[in-house]
Length: 483
Ligand code: ZN
Image 1: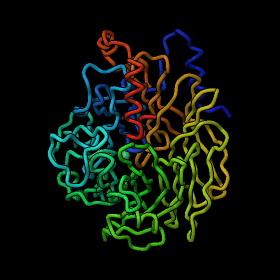
Image 2: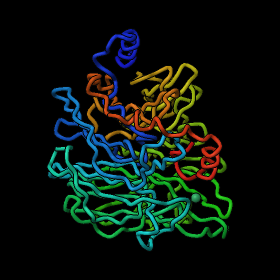
Image 3: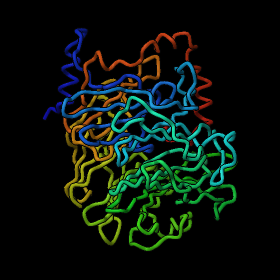
């Protein structure tokens, strides 16, 4: 079956130089790596509107909204200023940090909140009590809130969170309490959360979840983590994570293993998948002993996504080596991991929807010789085998970076994507929201938001390949953003 997304793109291609009335993107001012599955949610569906946030020009946060009833886009609007951005906008990707992209949440009153702007904070902001400045930390973690409920046009900063954070993530409980998770500094820092019971006006002090410390096995290695947090069943929060042996003096990008645990927010207790209580913050030793899903050894793992089925059992997907591996707790054990889309092409991170313990639908990015696509992969046998499903968007030339699933996503607006063309002489990206029916289109005349930016960067020197390569090597292991 030909998907509407492909039909749309084919139709746009056929239009050639004729003015296309609708384009598959809502904005053209994504910048660098505008979205990631790690800083999440990238958006939320709330009372008929899908709100999305991404990294725009100058690495500043931008917010747009889609009104489903009228099929109209609003924005994007700039929602704050990232201290990490350079002016004018750079055309050399090595000049970008890319860690300060926003995570968005809507509170009980309909105000929108963003956290953005930091890669572990800057030493000029003082001592970091829960972590270290290491590997180029910078910026200032910033909390912005919309001036009015459900209105993305005007924002103000609330100075009520520490400046030392990165990989900011929001979890909203069913009762509206907000949990802000992040790594409290550079690689060698605790992962923490702060709780707000008053719609983000105040937060409890940071509470450590995963502990950073010198490895008990090797004094030249520091225990470090990459973690992903989301709603579990009821009032629980899941943590799926990987271990980073942060090495001295020769740093490596290695990450390994996959882990799972959950927080009961009523008691504040973390438990493993069997329900055994964990001492927190969790150390490497207790993680290995009590929360390990799979020891991947020399195979590099990357943070994944995790959801809970109707029995309260976790399912998780992690990139491991060249695969995306799916894991499912069957009530007594972790089922043997299965490679989703094995042999189909190059895959990277994705997210998934559990329809029943045995039926799961996953959105994956897939690259083949024919091009790139974002599409469904489905299992009906509890994840043992996966079949390719419909394509949400595809292109022979353009590639796509993807967010995790938007929070409470409407079927027409599941995920935020950034799309780049390899021939573009700049770092601006087209921004798309895709759903079951493909991209949410917009009149071409409304989708251009670069203003005179292409003029302003014309005087910049071309990217220095040697410098970029040296910088890339130096930064290796710093993040998911740098391949
Ligand atoms: Zn490290």
